[in-house]
Structures are given as structure tokens and as C-alpha cells.
Image 1 (tube, helix red, strand yellow):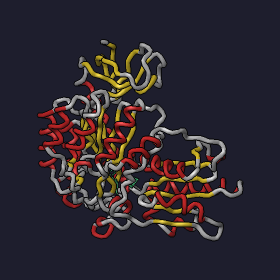
Image 2 (cartoon, helix red, strand yellow):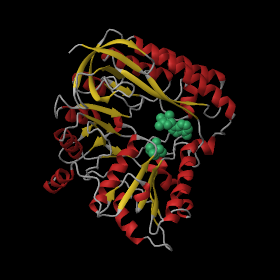
Image 3 (tube, rainbow, N blue to C red):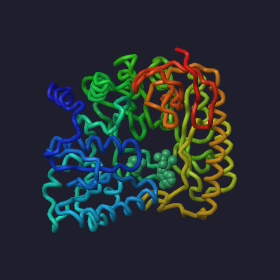
Length: 458
Ligand code: 5AD
Ligand code: SF4
């Protein structure tokens, strides 16, 4: 990295978010963690251009929604919000409304009929110019996708409140083209970010008191940096971040079952501060569905990877994503999903009914033919089973000792703290006056399906 870049990142590291004399920007974020991180990049760019953040929509000169297109209901929610934003615009002179992110990329001109600004995920550097150019007669749009943009040199303005955990994007886009998924169309081709900027960002966070970083990518296992000075793959990057300090926890998401390598698993095992948790979306337990979804693995491959993870890291936390009612899914396919979930016993899962997305391969090739009621029935069975599996997974923790990173007081009882174990499981335990960012040793005494209830052993 050149000196200039390093200085910019140092200067930008952790900066004040508010300043009454500047035009104010309000931002709402929808969708994935990556979008939260993108909002932090957007704020950094706008802050450098003279804007200040406001948390009140009534104070805002610029109202932005960073949007998600992954399922139809995500988009419907945002159309509803746009109507509310327009009320703000009607009531106050000079207010500008902008839609950025995946929905901006997907719907382009359709959105421009309702808002002043439409900007896709690769165009955030142009936001200051776009905002400047807006007039009542000329709304502005930039939805160009890039093969290079990684925002590598931009130090995100942290939106997290506790100053303990932060997210770092290590790559953008996706090359996988799962048949149901809109992401390759909204976020473009996969590109990896310069590892030195990643390690530098993590180090600055640590120096500013952060204790945990999560490396983010649609498919972190395919991270690949090539340069004349040397190449780097994901396990090497993971190691480089872990080496910053044993006091800095490192997490990552999302892993793809077809790509997660033994090298990643052994690197996790080698470093205490690489958290023992893998989010490994399975989507379906039926090899027939997996083939149609173009996941490029089958049920046996997935179970083999889980077996490998557990043989190397016996206590590794495992979570997943499941889709119910994909095109042509039979009762047997659904039963295969349930049986895989019983076999693996995931700690938790994000579970969804299939939502056909215009433009995807599935929308062109496969009918969305599972009736709404049937999808809902299957999804409810999946959710109910996962509830039992979460409890089962937690019950096996009783009696174990864990190192927990304190997030803050527990919501239910101010005399207790909450925080996550390495496995990402939520722990609640008696406070001895520790604060967010401290580590505590606890012992699991009892559990619910969502929480480990612990005593103190330190
Ligand atoms: N319908 C339902 N769920 C979807 N996901 C992605 N696309 C769709 C879709 N069209 C889910 C997958 C993915 C998660 C982020 O969202 O489970 O892993
Ligand atoms: Fe994130 Fe995908 Fe939603 Fe885009 S469409 S915000 S990548 S979850």
C-alpha cells in the first residue's frame, strides 16, 4: 500500500458522525451485513464531501435507503418506505430522496419516477456529484457495475453503537449464479480487495478499541488477490488478520459449501482468536434441488464438509440458510431437507420461502410452481424443526467453559451481561462491572433454544 493510502485511512479511522453546520444525511439500511458495511462506506464518502449524519429523518436534507432485492417482500417494504419519505419531501423544502444498493441496480428507471437519486452498489464514489446535480427537473442515476471497485481505500464510518465489533468487506460481487439468486445481477462480478488495506483496516480498528472483526464476502472462500508482490488466498488472509493480536477476534461470512477448503478449516483450528463458527448455507437437503439451484454440490458433499469441520474443530458452531418450496420441490425433497437438518443439528438457521426474482435463471427456466400455502407449510415445518435442533445443539454445551466477549448489559436483567462465545452462541451471565469489549470466562449452567445461561468462573 502506498503511504498516501495509509495516511488517509489513519486520518479517517474513527471520526465524529455529527456536525450541526453541515447538510444532514439520514440513511436506512436493509438486507445483509454487506449492506450495513456499504452504508458505512457511503457515509465516509459523504462525510468527506461535507455532509454530516443525522439519526432523525425530520432533520435530514438527504434521505437515503440502502436497499435489498433478495426476496420480493424486501422490495415491497422499501416501496412502502419511499411513500413515507415522499411525505417528508412534501412537508419540507429542498429535501432529496435517494435509493441506493441492490434495488437501485435492479429497478433503475422505475425508481427514478419516485425519487431524486438512484445509485447502484458500485457507484457510491459518485454520490457527492450526483447529489450536487439534482434539480426538481433532473433526478440523477448511476447504476454502472464495475469489475474493479472494492472501495479499498475508504475507511468506513462505523455505524455500530458499541465500538467492539466491526465488519470489513474483503470482496464484492459474486460469480456463482445460483439459479434463484439476484445478487450476481445487482452486485456484479466478483473482485477481491487488496489484502494490505484489509489488514490495515483491522489493525486501525483494534488500535481504536475494537475487539472483533468479521470479514465479509458473498463467498469468502473464493477470495483471491493476485499481484506482482505475491498472491493471497482466503486462509492466508484470515491468518494475516488473526496475527494482528491474539486479543482481536476474527470471524468471517459467508462460506460456500463447494469452496470451503481444508486449509480454511486447519487455519481456524490453528488460531485461538479465529472464532469457531462457520455460516454454511445449505439451501436444500435434496441433491435434485441443489442441482436445479446450481449450487454445484450435493447432499453427500455437504455432509462430508460438515464431517471434516467437526473432525478438525469438534466444537465448531454451524449455522445455515434454507429455502423452502423452490421450483418443482416434491414432498420427498422437502423431507430430505428436514432429515439433513436433523443429521447436522445446526445451531441456528435463516429460513425462507422461495421468492422468484425477475431476471434470474430460475425465473426463466423453472416455474414458481409450489402454491403459497404449501411453501408456508414446509417453511413452518423447517422453522419448528430448527427450534428443536437449536435447543439440542445448546443442550450439549451444558457444563462447558467458554470465553465470551461482552457486548453489554443483558436486555432482560441489568445485573447480567450478554456476549457471544467463539461459536457465536449468545451467553448471559452475572456482571461484575465489566463493560462492552471485555472478555469473561463463563460456565454453561442451563440453556434455551436461543441462549446459554452461564455462571462466572473467573
Ligand atoms: N428466495 C428465497 N430465498 C433466497 N435467498 C437468496 N435468494 C432467494 C430467493 N430468491 C436466501 C438464500 C441465501 C440467503 C442470503 O437468502 O438462502 O443464502
Ligand atoms: Fe445483500 Fe443480496 Fe440483499 Fe443485495 S440482494 S442487499 S447482496 S442480501
